[in-house]
Amino acid sequence: MPEMHHDPPGETVPNQPALPPTPITLNGQYCTLTPLSMEHAPVLYELLGGVENAAIWTYIPYGPFADLESFTEFIKTHVKGSPFFTFVIWVPEGSRLSAAPTGSIDVAHARPVGLISYLNIVPEHRSIEVGSVLYSKALQRTTAATEAVYLLIKHCFESLHYLRCEWKANNLNEPSKRAAIRYGFTFEGIFRKHLVIKGRRRDSWWSSMTDEEWDGGIQSALDAWLAAENFDHEGKQKKKLEEFRQGGTVMTKAQ
Image (cartoon, rainbow, N blue to C red):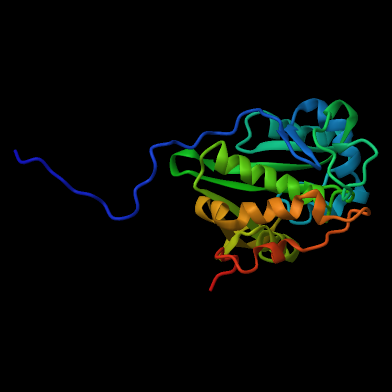
């Protein structure tokens, strides 16, 4: 019987497999990420729970949580048997979240300010998503908030060997969409009537970043933006992240 030779179309994929996330601490200049555990529930509830924080959950498929008991159950689902891999975001105790970088952060002398996750983790297809972003009011629109996303993207490409990182949002969630484009994700399209969330129809806004884009300018732009010399003594940026990407070859909006 003759031997069959048939090469499917498309670019070949490197033999290096993608790895599932494992419990690890990710250290940055402004924040540190550690795996979520049950012991974090009470202090996180103070930041993310209760009526005063209900707006944080507007576009999240679950929540808000009116009491510690229900919030603890939510944390339990993310710690045990969840398809998510969730990290707690820590900043130095008493620090201003847009202040100069502090270097290595000792979690024993730090405070939690939010949660961020990997989800839709598909190692065989080298694809992963950064999402389920829950930033406390104190963390929103800060340097540490940007660095938390940076740390997850960097880890998935450089340590876990993924080829694609996704960012999805409710199409009504304009802040999330703007953030994705700012980080360097490329808009891919709208999945119409994609989900039903809290009894409401959701059109999902999809974007992605590839390993070539990360290596081709996105990482260097983020590194330059996060550098201490890009901030004055009050922690105000001197140049916007988008300015560091200007003149590069990385496309951040669909053409």
